Amino acid sequence: MGGRYRSEGSWGITPVPERLRVLSGLDTGLLWGNLGVSLLVIVAGAVLVPALSLPQALLAIALGCLVGNLMLGAAGAIGADARVPGMVLMRAPLGRRGSYLPTAANVLQGLGWSTFELLVIATAAAALSEELFGFGAQWAWTIAFGAAALVLSLLGPIGFVRRFVRHFAIVVLPIALAYLTWWTLDGADLGALWSAPGAGGLSVWQGADVVVAITVSWVPYAADYTRFSTTRRGAFLGTGLGYLVPDAWMLGLGALLVLSRDLSDPGALPAAVVAGGFAAILALFALLVTETDEAFANVYSAAVSLQNLVPRAPQPILLALVATLATAGALLLDFASYEGFLLLLGSLFVPLFAVLFADWLAADRHYPSERVFEAPAWRPGLVGAWLAGFCVYQWLYPTGPAWWVDLVSKLDPPSWEIGATVPSFLVSFALASGVAFLHRPASGPIA
Image (tube, rainbow, N blue to C red; front, side, top):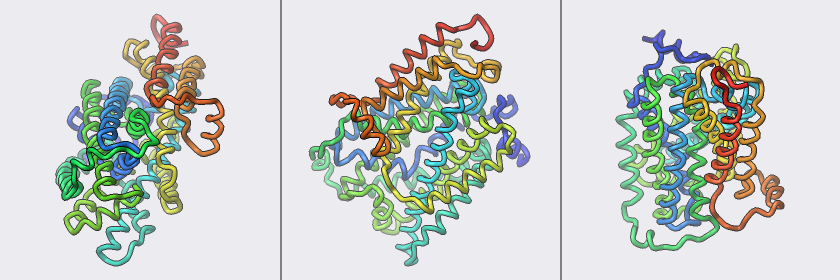
């Protein structure tokens, strides 16, 4: 059995063989359900308030989770169909060299999310150890959890599900979440919180964009895991529903924590939980241990994405490289521009998924291996459809570094606060559908 885990963990970019397509819909649901439980998602939920009122924040969460998880589930199904990693999959719509563009963005995303995850974990662990033992040692926690993420990533998806999720997370997480939810609501005046107005500065649709962004950031990763799924249906349901429930729960919990505990800084959430008493500390510790899976997923997918650029590079070496860089980043960085980071990722990956989905539909909902590996070097029409969606997103809701926002703002974005996710998706999907169907071959790879 150990040899089987090792062979799966180092599987490269070629289609996964039938012997390794062993993750059932339940396994996939457990994997994504575990990934959905994250302190980072709680922090994202905290971003929504007090700009939005509690009812508005919950509506934004519901809308964002519905849209984001439909995209995520569909991406999982496409991955199960093609049986290749997410960035290799992008060769079909964008071309072999065209896929290098999202690959570079996805590697940066993987490094960024890994860094943020380790930063969140180490911050919470330092607050916990400071409360219990009188010292924080955040640097030591960063290194320790970075090493743990590397160990988990070396197991690969099958080993991760069977050795970590089934034996530990499935038991510990529900208990920890139930307690933290009770602690958040205990003593809170829900009536007053419900009726309190929002401070303004954020619309419901813009809040939904924040929620979609944290979900859609997983879309380029989905195939990295569902390529090991037994069926497309199981991949779709396991991915979409598996992530939906904890995603909505964590986001709502983050909003409630800020309002019920009067926190103005989302980064102060871990310390606030630690101050809740010994039981809250135990619950936080359980979440910290399982939080490592988020870092695992980002390290693993960043390394697998790199293999689209350097397919002959040994995967364990790439995993060690990504884990080392993420750990170093977590030692040097702090919380900054988190919302902008999320929305910038969303502006890239929402239209990217639209292009993938449109091309897959034009290919009769099936990507044979030759459509991926014998694709032309570039498919400029679909690359253009992706970039058009990105431009629409940024025009409707400029986000990113301050210099970029200032530059885009000179284009006079509309003042109506409709959000950018749905319009950017529709633009890219419509353009990509037209191009894909126009150049649809009778058989074989697209020219």
